[in-house]
Image (cartoon, rainbow, N blue to C red):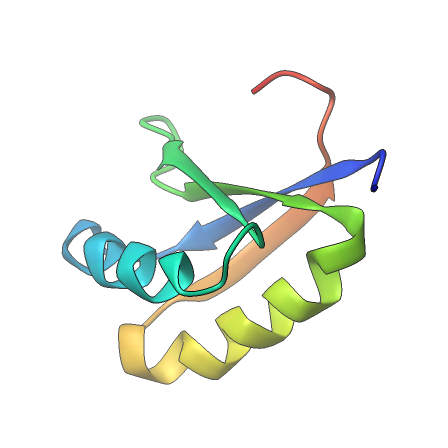
Length: 80
């Protein structure tokens, strides 16, 4: 089991978040969609380090269809 988590911040329109959630639910235990940060407007996703590469590839494959962009990712400080 992974010991480290990453926060992945995605720029996506609010209307597309539901579609992204629907797609990601098919990937069991891969990712935890949290919320859109009101200050930045970015969607925060939490990913375990073992899955980070796979999640980034998945999001990249959806970028044109859902008009999303991974803005940054960083180690999660342990605060959900």
